Image (tube, rainbow, N blue to C red):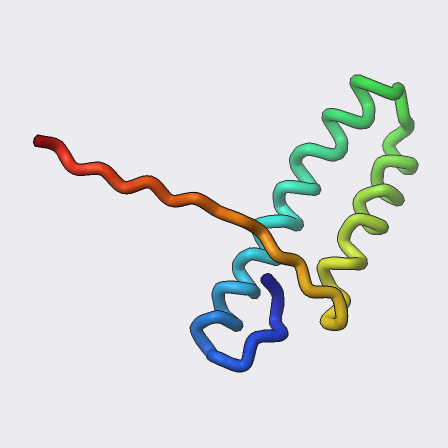
Length: 74
C-alpha cells in the first residue's frame, strides 16, 4: 500500500488506499478519542496528524490483508 510499487496499476491502487486510510483516521479518531478518553479537540487533531505521518513516508511499507468473497445466485 502506498506509492512505492513500480507498476502503474499498483501505484494507483496504493494512492487510493492511502486516501482511504486517511479518511478512516479522520472519521474514527475524533469520535473514539473524545467519547472514550475525554480528549480536547486540539489533542485529537495532533493525534490525527501523528497517525498520518507514517502514511506519507515512502520508506514505510504498509501491508494490509484483504479478503474478497464473491458469490453467485443459483
